[in-house]
Amino acid sequence: MSEADANERIAVDPDVYIAKPSTEEDNQSETTSVSSSIYRGLIENGRRYQTMREDEYWSPADDLQFESLEAGHAVAVVLESDTPNPLFRAPVGSSAKNILDIGTGNGLWAIDVADMFPQATVRGVDIFPPPVTWMPPNCILEVDDVLREWTWREPFDFIHLRIMLGAFTDKEWDIVYQKCYENLKPGGWIEQLELDAHLEADDKSVPEDSMAASWGDATFGCAERSGRRIDTLNTMSSSIERAGFVDLNEKSNKWPIGAWPKDRQLKEAGLMNYHMWSAGLEGWGMWLLTKFGAPNPWPPEQVQTYVGKIRSELKNPRVHAYQKARRVWARKPLN
Image 1 (tube, rainbow, N blue to C red):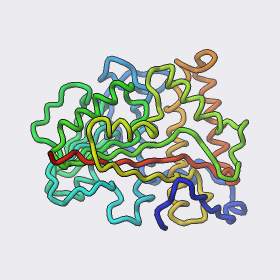
Image 2: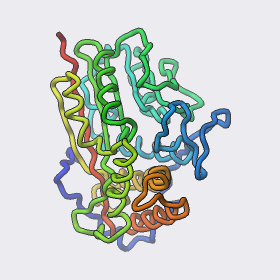
Image 3: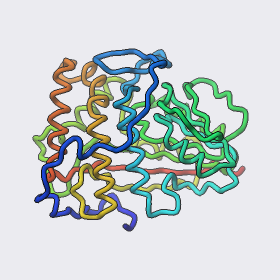
């Protein structure tokens, strides 16, 4: 498949209309996340949240959310599978010695890159321990807050971030990008991949009055009121340039949700993206809606009903939903 443009329509597979209705089991990944009971966090509304930072963060850190992250990693890799390197676009040479993955989540990207660069030390950092039982000897997963002082001694050749929307306030994002700039070698690269929370369809199969159509504005409003906007997809380019990076590149495309695309690669990605949404919806919405829902904070039961309806709509093969994605990579000047 050629590189998809964000404005290009995705062809629909007519065969999905005559197939049996899909089920949750049909769309689930064959792999599952591994968790360890030794790690404890803050339990709220049945979900586990980090306690590393003093302030709260909207995303849970539990088995179901790690399962969603695992599916998201698979989508990103599948949609880049026709490129020489499906893990990133930055022209990082084979001589790279130090690589950092900020917001590593379940650590899958860091582990895969460590396999790709056996001569490099690849560090993955997040505010909650990843559910990993094995990793390559050159991969180190750490629990830390990147807003604090960085204590790594060697500068990095490459720093990677992915699906970090809502992780920081606007001011904190500026701090993170500045720290990335300061801790990269001259000529080193930064790359970030982000998603839009809004659900769209080129053929209007996501009606304006549907639950799926309301999701983006509902969560955007909650995030705005919480002080942590989730429009990172639209702000990261200018923020990265403002930090001093040059030679900025962008690639935008669409992540389909469900098996409806005709193209084989997009169909595979859509199946996994449906699983990411199915596993992730409650976690994405629970903290935001119960604390900052409009016109008043929602009870947990209302959130569960809401996300259940969205799952049902996205499971319908006649709904050709997608979300926009954008990848940005840029270089620290040599001088």
